[in-house]
Every structure is written in C-alpha cells, then in structure tokens.
Length: 516
Ligand code: AMP
Ligand code: MG
Image 1 (cartoon, rainbow, N blue to C red):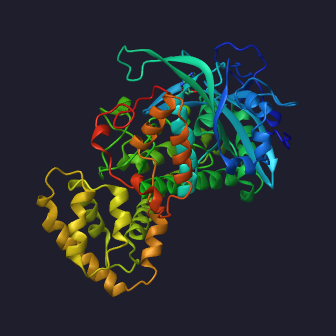
Image 2 (image 1 turned 180 degrees about the vertical axis):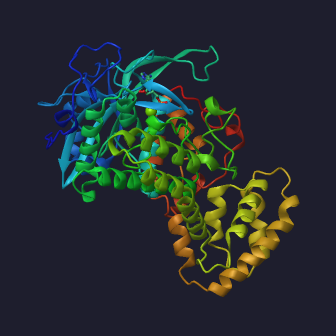
Image 3 (image 1 turned 45 degrees about the vertical axis):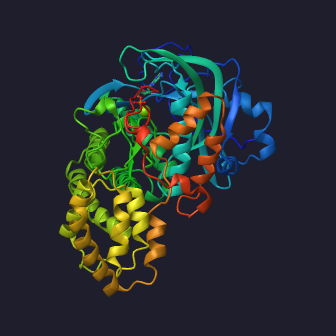
C-alpha cells in the first residue's frame, strides 16, 4: 500500500511544542502532535470504494492487514506524524473557549490525481483536546457518520467523506440520553476524508487569544491551498475569502433544505471553512414537513438548530467568522455589507431551489407568497417531504383526483380529510401552471433534485440494530442504495416508505442526543 504523502497543515503551521498526550490549553499553536491509541481487536466493517479510488488505493490494498492496522490507529504510516487540531467555538450561541480535536486525529494528507485529501480518524483515543471525555466513538454514531457522509455526497451536498468503518474490539461507556443510564457499547473508528478539516473555530480560537500572527498564517495557509483563485493574501483578499466562505455556507444550507437534512449541532466548531457538511452527530431527515423540528434532544427546548432556522444560524456563524478575521482586516464596513446581504441572498436561493423541487419555471406565476402558503400546507397536513416531492413529478397537471387520492398515504396526519379540499385547490392551480409552462423536461428535472432515497433515521437504526448483532449486511445495503439516491431502484422500493410506527418514539430514530 503506497500513498503519495503531501503533508501541509503540520508542515506549514505552528505546532504545540509539547509532545506528551495530556489534556491542556494549547497556546500559540494550530495543532498538537499525538498518536492514536491502539485498539485491541480491530475488524474492518466497511469501506468506500469511491474514496479508495480517490486516494489511489485498490481493493487488494484495502484487504491487507496493514490497511486495517493504519485505519484502526494501531500503526503509523511511514514518514507521517499524526496530530490533533486546536480550535474553539460558539456552542448553542455561547463562546465555549478551546474545544479542538478531542477524538479526531489527523493522519496525513494524500495527493492523488491533482487533488489533496486529509485523512482523519474519529474515535481513536485521547488527545490534548479531549477535555473531560474519552476520545472514543461508539459503533452506532460511527455507522451514522459513515453512511450519511457518503450518502450526502451522492445527493450532491458538499460534505466530508469517509474511507473506512472499523470496529475497535473495545467497549466504550455511554449514557445515551444523559439520564443516568450508562452502558457499555461497542467502540468504532471512522476514517474521515476531506480536502481539509479546518473549521470556523480554528480561526476563532486564535483571535480569542490575540494570537494575530498565527491568525494571519492560518488564513494565508487556507487561502493558498483552498482559495488560491482569490490571489495573493491581502486585506482585500481576506474580505473576498469571507464572502466566498459565506456563499458556500449558504449554498450548503440550501442543499440541506432541498434534501430535508437537519444537522442538529451547528456550533461554529462544526462549520467547515470549505462549506462542507461536517461532524455528523444528532442529525436527522425531515419526514413530516415541520420546519420547527430538530432531532437533537439536547436542543429540544430552544430548537436553535431546527430545520427552518439553519440559514439564520449559518449567517450568525459567518458573522462570528468575520469577527474572528476582523483583526487582520481592520475594516468593518465591507464585512457588514457581506453579512447584511446574506439574508436576501439566501431567500433568493431558497425560492429558486423550491421552484426546482416543484418543477416550475421562474416566470413569476408561482410567487413567494404562493410558496409560503404551499410550505404551510405541507406543514399542517404533515406531508412526508421526500415522498411528496418525488411523487409530484408523476402528476400530469390534469388528473387532480388521481393524484389527490395518493396524498393521504404520504401524510402522517391522523385525519387527512381535513386537508383534502386545500390540496384539491392547490393541485388545481399548480396543475394549471405546469400546463401553461409546458416544460417537457419537468419530470426528469424534478427527479434530479428530489431524491427518492435518503438515510431516514429509522433506516440507519435498522443498520445499527443489525450491526449490534454483528450483521453488517444492512450497512452494505444502505451504502449501495444511497449511492444512487435519484435512481428509481425498483428492487429497493421498501426503503421508499414513510417512517414506520415503531420508530416514532424510539431512541436513535425520533430522539438523538450529542452522546456519541
Ligand atoms: P461535537 O459537539 O461532537 O462537535 O463535539 C464538541 C467537542 O467535544 C469537540 O471538541 C469534540 O472533539 C469533543 N468531543 C466530543 N465527543 C468526544 C469524546 N468522546 N472524547 C473527546 N472529545 C470529544
Ligand atoms: Mg464537532
């Protein structure tokens, strides 16, 4: 197994001079060297063939013991030096100080076919940033991260990826719902892959400590490697950098809205500087269309990170990033202009995206008020988002009754008859618009933006329940299904289904916490 190693982060930025692995505040450094903690009896559960190809490996490489040992954290690849990054963040709106890679350890950067990939183990033991936790991850949350990050990529949503899912052979103690019921669970390690894992919080921690020289180095590093098209770093380029990060972040949220994804913990330490979806924890997928929904029980009271609030939070987070970079820009006005423009920018994109989901052309016939009314109708009639939009492409615009008859089976409402008239009226007027617009590509265009399959929480839970009994076949089935989320895959129709009754109140399906 041979990688083309091209490390940059730990070569070009300042390291913590202390090499011992104990928990501490790390000043004047972007990272600390730390090796993964070996695990006792690793097993490779699954790997992504896409990422295997992307980093220049073949199937024979993946099947070696060397691969297993490296991606279980038991062996260090020659001439590399693993490290954990230092970052801070705002958690649930409050500055939390130093956080950092408490259970992520970056192995190395690989260069392949003109692309750089950073490889990072999640759940491979303590680091200087582990605070009061153990540095490990449990199997259930690792399956969720592994499957979802790959699924998101195939949905066309910017995301970190995953190379491998390894069962560590060791047990980890967790109190899933934080209610005093701790239990041992199987430990696991995911190898995550992305061009970079830098977060908003990597910049914030430096500013909070007035480490401005390092802040400049980190910003210049990020621009040089990932925003090179912006040119040689200068104050103007820093402003352009924030503008582009802001736009990418909004685009990412629009994609989340399109597919019904709720991240669950949009703290600034979970915001990628590349605009990638990062840190899959208590995320969820909207089933009944409820903009107030969040899967994260830790956030149940305020629902700060609810589906319909993700754009507001993204803007708030970009504002925090702008604050972090202000000391090296020293001009408030251009930053204010960027922030102030984001809401409008978002609203335009949201409107266009929703029109695409509806298969409508932007000719003004279906205006913003019509969209609001429609979203409200989806909400109050508890329509399953994925099934509703996917099926709408089959409506011909003429046979209202035929489509109306299907709707009760897409809804979670106990008594759908209450909404029948509203939907009949809506289908009638929508039907008239599509007849008038007469877009012959409507169906295929709709099916390219409305997935047939997403990783509903109950689906991940079925894979987890099987894996707990050492049956990993559902992981493989879902991995393959979600590689083609826009294809019909008639043999997989059983996954094109509303959330089953049993999942309504089950932990892991309706309820998730940050415990992972
Ligand atoms: P999260 O909310 O999962 O994004 O995590 C917030 C912070 O807690 C990050 O600094 C994580 O590295 C850290 N963290 C979460 N779980 C663990 C764990 N089991 N061990 C060590 N650090 C953790
Ligand atoms: Mg995190």
